[in-house]
Amino acid sequence: MTATPQAMETPGHHRRLAIWAVAVTLFVASTGQTIVSTALPVITADLGGLNRMSWVVTAYLLASTVGAPIFGKLGDLFGRKAVMQAGLGVFTLGALICGVAPSMEVLIAGRAVQGLGGGGLIVVAMAVVADLLPPRERSRVQGALGGVFGLSTVVGPLVGGFLVQSLGWHWIFFANLPVVAIAWVVLQSALRGRAPGARPHIDVAGAALLTATLSGLVLVTSMGGTALGWSEPAMLALIGATLASLTGFLFVEGRAAEPILPLSLFRLNAVAVVNAAGLLVGMAMFGTITFLPLYLQVVQGVSPVLSGMFLLPMMGGLIAASMVSGRVMGRTGRYKALPVASTALLAVAMLGLSRLGPDTPLWQVVALMTATGLGIGPMMSVGVAAIQNAVPRAMLGVGTASANMFRLIGGSLGTSIFGAVFGAELAQNLAGRVEGAGLGTISRDSVMALEPHLRESVLAGFAAALDPIFLLAAGIATLAFAVTLLLREVPLAEA
Image (cartoon, rainbow, N blue to C red; front, side, top):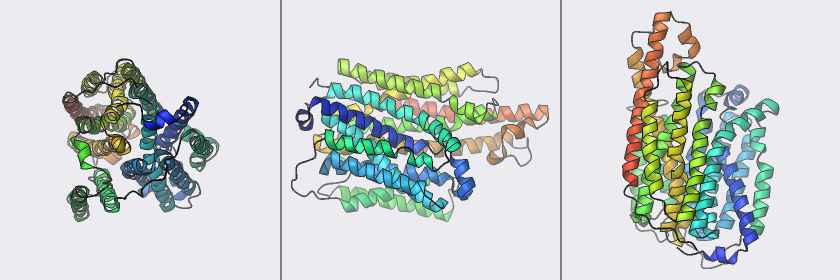
């Protein structure tokens, strides 16, 4: 793939400005997903609605998953500049709704609007880089952007906690608005708009069915076994509606003039392999983020704040591996060995985590989390670069969007599946040991209040309930390793 027309038309200093604006936009959009996590207890104390607290996170995740392919396709049709600026507008509107929300219902609605813009911004930002830079130079920048994404996962909760303590929870939604405004202005001057041409056909039916399919999938995986039992009529109806939407989507996309997610895209080796591996790695990643703090708090007695800090080695490894992978791709033009080696390392790290127990030294946890980050990082940069190197220019946006979409779906599936496995194992391990014991009644304080012989037994049972989760994650990472072996490498061109 040679340099894009926009790269040849855009002056060098404008390209640099645009890439900085893209990095800032990506950071803002990705922190939007995590910045509320430390503020949720304060928000629910103010607005009420404790039983709907999880929807503040779920609404953003669901809308981001839906927004990624739709904004990616709109960028292909109408040009990246206009769509990215529109995404900034949607993100800002959602943030304003959240910041002034008088009730939990309004806050959840605002988070959905914000997530729609945020999910779109992430994929369009990465597509802008592909427009502006030749493949090898692009890979270095994509590696750095993968680092930005990882950094935001750590910074978001920390900034959210600081703002809540110093200014109030409303400011976690207002703080980014000046940065968004600057990014909008920079993009206005640094990017060229698309020249007017024939009015493109918009696949409304495909977009609606894709929205219904992805929404149903996220709802099934996030609510199944928790808010709704798997055999309840409402859950069965939701599963049926999701399958019906998927069937309708596949039928419509096979006949649409401008499909919102072209099925032909998945006949490309890079797209099929990268997205399959990305979904599997996303499952392992989100499962680790969800359950490792639980182990640290209950079994090891680490404070909630410190347990969150134990995710820093993972994110440090992720950022380092993503950036190094980008540099290796930029220098050599080769990339297949990177995801192959990293998924193998991820499988080993998950296997190590499955051996955690009450007496595991904390330095070992840090080492395993670092290895986990190193195993995940290359998929962030290599995956996007491989897809962008393989797809036709007309599918650049939607191809890039597919990588983000499948990673989010993997995260949702992983959290749900691992949660179900953990709940079943914990109930079995604690049966007869603690009267009325269950997932919702176990905490470090309640365990330490038990008689010494019971306490040791419960801690061992709790740690043992986590073993199958990480063993399953190791199996998933091994499957991802096998999938990456199928990747057919097309070396990156220098210009």
